[in-house]
Image (cartoon, rainbow, N blue to C red; front, side, top):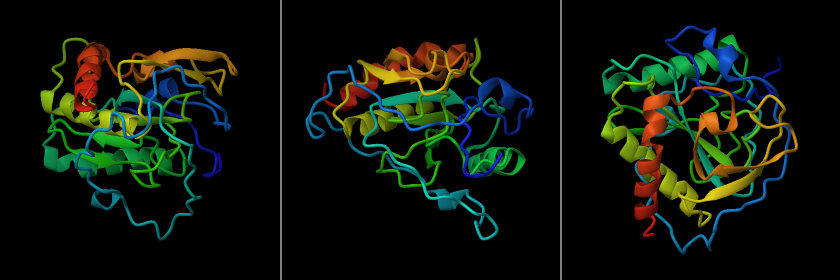
Length: 249
């Protein structure tokens, strides 16, 4: 597949078996419109501070031998999808850049995608990393949720958070802070719903279907998958509430 053809992905392997990719990502995204249903307000009405974000330069390999098409952008971000990376949990946080680099290699070298699909990644210590290129302040079109990559951002938790697995509070706090900031740029309430149009029939909804989804959703809300895992999915309600408080709601 050409590098310019972005293949949406969900839970990615990195240190996990590459076969998991097949279960999490397929298809090529087309530009689609997405209609909001959330109680969006002017961007400065319920903004939240930008949390610290480690730049790509901390993990990204040199691009001298790679041809990278320019980033694609939407008009704004009106929803967030939370993922897990389906990789081991027992890592030292100092190893996070190497883990992200391994995930990136799985997508760009093994699968020949043009960039890592997630817009952001968060480690177990709550450190937020810039993922996909294009600028953390801008509404970069990701490749993280089949059918719903437009007007959304993808946040991946480094690890595997199936039932019974502990989800570090530092990680959920960081996800909430990041979601509050990104959604706040468009005045979107993290507890609301949004109307998005599926662009791909391999998503949970047929192509062209207008789906009502949480503005702070799990990957499984848009795609047939268990990602971001039962344990992290169970934490989404409190993540939404914390994000809303950070916006002053």
